[in-house]
Every structure is written in structure tokens, then in C-alpha cells.
Image (tube, rainbow, N blue to C red; front, side):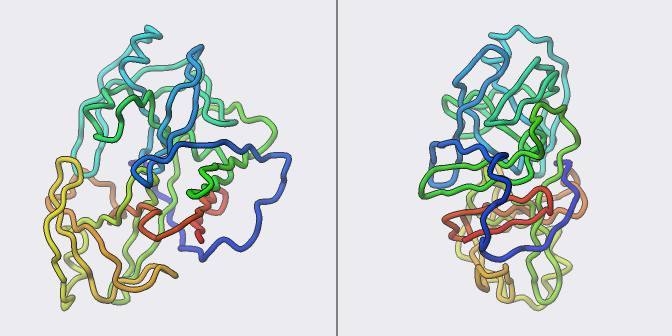
Length: 275
């Protein structure tokens, strides 16, 4: 992940997004209660299925789409939780999600069916390189509507370094920094990163859990607080080393773990709001 800007957690959404002329509202499919699937386009191929994933620094295109377009690819790698995985990179002439259009876009290419159990019939995963081109994304899980507020009237922009939204939990008066990940449904913390801050914490272990190929413990950490979500939420404590995890990242927050019906990702002020 390349996100590095931190932000405090905001409270519930209380005010409407301004500048109606810049708003673009789209419907989406909701899978497994948390995954947002929207219509998108890559080059001449329309009505493709994109997962919106703010936990991914780069957009990933499926190999079947790259094969259809005949794009040239080069080998590379990417960090996925704790592991560095081999991938391919390619340039696509144009990619569009909602009002966001990126030209000459360098994106990853991978077999999505193998990378995620939720990626059946998915053509691409839209990451922060695309999504952060908006000022705000507002997601209504109940109405299944997503509102894009673009930065200006010209939405055709190059891909720049992605910046994710971080929130801060407090564990015994010590900050814990999580990346907001719409492609994830839980709260996951890296045990190795938290260990120095867990002295004296009575960890309540509730059983073993898995995040893909990773092993984690489902736990409650007394003293853990996340804004208005209340104290002591259920979290997944991920085992193993964190050498491949970027510095300053202690874990991931799936917004649905907040019990939120609506969320707003404000990339202009780097804030998360929910209700």
C-alpha cells in the first residue's frame, strides 16, 4: 500500500455534500453485505464489473480483460497484507468508473479469481489511484447508491500517487492507525505492530479466523475505542511478521464493521464520516 496521510475519525454524517453540479450518482450491487460492485469501462469494453476497494493502492484488471485488449505486460510485485506477491503491470488507454476517467493508466493485471474468493465474474478492482481522484465518495448501503463528487468539471485526469484515509483507534491511550478498506468487512490489526502497546491488556480470544491465506485470532481488546462505534469492538488479530507492511500502518478497517448504513470518504480533507 502506498497510502501515507493520516486523518482523525469524524463522527456521523450531518451535512449534505455541496456543489450539486459536480455530483454523479450511480447504483451498485452489494455482495456479501459489504462489497461494492459498480459498472465500469476499460478502453472499448463497456459494462464491466468493478469492485471499489479503498484498501488497494492500485487498480487491478483481470487477465481475461488484458488478454482481450492485447496490452503488453511487464512483471512486478505488490504487497497484499503481509506478503509481497508477483503480479504483472500494463498500460491501458482509458479506464472509467463513474465520472472518473484515467488515460494512459498503468495498472496491475492479475487472476482475480485466484486472488479473492469474492471476485467471481469481476473484471477489475478499482483502487485508490482511481477513487482518490474524487473529492468525496458517499456510499448508501441500504439504497445501494454511490455518489461521486468530482474535484472539478474536468474529470479526465492522470493517475497520481494514491492517498488513503486513515482512522485512529485508541488502545490504552495509545494511537493505532488503520487504513479504511471498503473491500474488507472486519477490523484487522497486526499483532506484531500492536505488541508494544498491549502490555497489561486482557486479550479476550474468541477463536481462530482466516483472511484469505492468513491466520488470525478473533479477539476483543478491552480499552480499544473507535469514535462513536463504541468501546471494545470485535477485531481480527493477524499473526506473523510485518516486514512487508508499510510503516505507520497497524491494520485495516472495513466500514461495515462500524454498523454503518451510510459512509462518506472525504479525500479532500482525508476524513471518514458515517451514520
